[in-house]
Length: 317
Picture 1 (cartoon, rainbow, N blue to C red):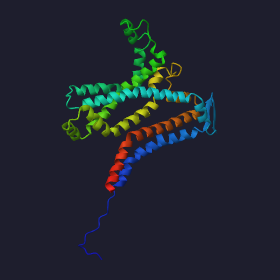
Picture 2: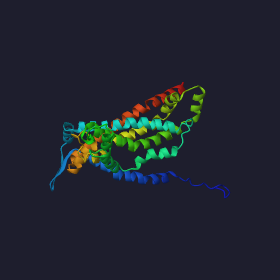
Picture 3: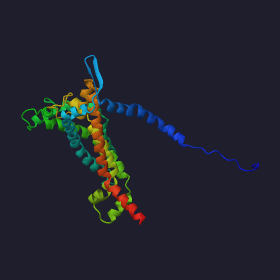
Picture 4: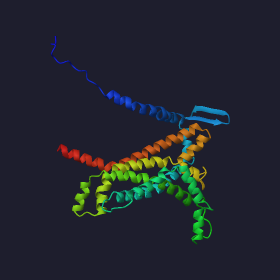
């Protein structure tokens, strides 16, 4: 028997159950509103399932027939359109965002009014894409202010139809996506650069390194994880591009469907109630997005992984 003076054993309190309780709502919402719809989309992609008038055809299992039909149709063209629109908008976006982030975080430049400029470059991100597209549709129409200015300045003798040319339409869509997102990218890259140890720059400056050398030898390698995040999220958003080209071309992807994106093509199948083909398009888009994101992540983090392996190998010697 234990003596009366012996200390009593206290029950151990486990706090991990509260952690599971707090994260449970996220997983419940994710399963109900994301995972289950994703599974049903992949499931119906193997079925003939569409509406014809008031009659619903299917679901009848047809295997990979929907996918074969997709690749025999214009799906490769729409994928190419989507990638072109994303690349043309993303390349200047990442270049200008890197320059702005480097300038705003460089204390030696002593830039004035940084708060004002940061607010201005981020403001387009707050404007709805539909309103942005309607604004550009008005500005660059045949009788719009841009054509009026170019004619009054003597640059053009007659109005240029921006929305009737492939270069004009794709250029406007890419330019709008650039304006809407380069401010957000700049803020992310600024946060990444501000997280770099200032002692590295001080040591490099003492050794006589120039601004360009510090940028390419210190800044870029150390912010590569954030750049991978920016590229992956931008790629996902680019493959899901819909609102700007949909409104700017009135849903037709003019001229000659050269600005029709994957999601616009998917929307056409959803509008026609062809759920089987819509599921096949969604599944293909998901796989393409996953493969491209994996490639981008592997390329951007390859040097970091090799450096970690070398450090581990040196530690074991």
